Amino acid sequence: MAKIAIVTDSNSGITQAQGKELGIFVLPMPFMIDDETYFEDINLQAEEFYQKMAAGSNIMTSQPTPDSVMQLWDSILKDYDEIVHIPMSSGLSSSCESAMMLAQDYDGRVQVVNNQRISVTQRQSAIDARMLADHGLNAATIKERLEADKFNSSIYIMLDTLVYLKKGGRITPAAAALGTILKIKPVLQIQGDKLDAFAKARTSAQGKSIMVNAVKSDMQNRYGMVTDGTGYYLSMAHTQNEAAAKAWREEVLKEFPVAEIYIDRLPLSIATHIGPGAIAITCTKKMDYDA
Image (cartoon, rainbow, N blue to C red; front, side, top):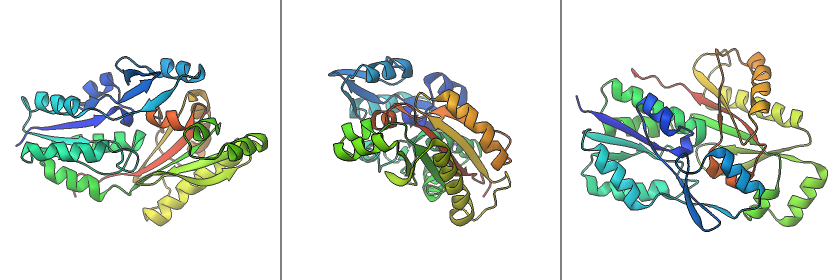
């Protein structure tokens, strides 16, 4: 049986330490902050990132250099037969397309998965890949299974501020000012591709209700399943808002009879564009590893 390595990037939320525990290699994502390069979870921790954001630093996301990707792959392939590489969604970054181009020089030993996920849904894809490898599947088959499964997840995010969407040019300054005055809480969604507008809430409670109802609708209409606590994973994510996520988890558990709800921070690449204080809920259909 081929020895398969699973690689993802730090946009999955998997830290270097967690990666070692899970048996998953994690490629750190680079950031340019005030013209200096940082790498997530290497020389840039979340606390420092938010401090720099609050101080008004100029923060830009970037993608790993070809050299850094190939050096990681070459190092891994000394001990493994094949690699399954799971980057962040191709709809959110060109790093997936770049990795696919680089993989062409590896004679099929590196399979790059375009399953269009990020944050805790990308984390679940990496865990699924590890489980499929443990079930004896080769890298090409794992890629095929993950890509066939890519639309079986969704993320809904309620923002606390419009400042960073305005800063990134995603909304006009006038719209941001009006939204701030009216205290509008935008709800965004990621369903297999880009970060898109979904709804507008006037209060946090209304925004949470919108997101819970959206998840219920996805389960019934997109995944064809009931909300009885089986067949799916529920997770929460946040940008520097862990206390609110934990408090909301208790409310959500009353709506969905799941054993637990995993909480993690949204990756810094998303935080760059939406700012602190955001809270998110995600739903991912469970994969049948024996199918």
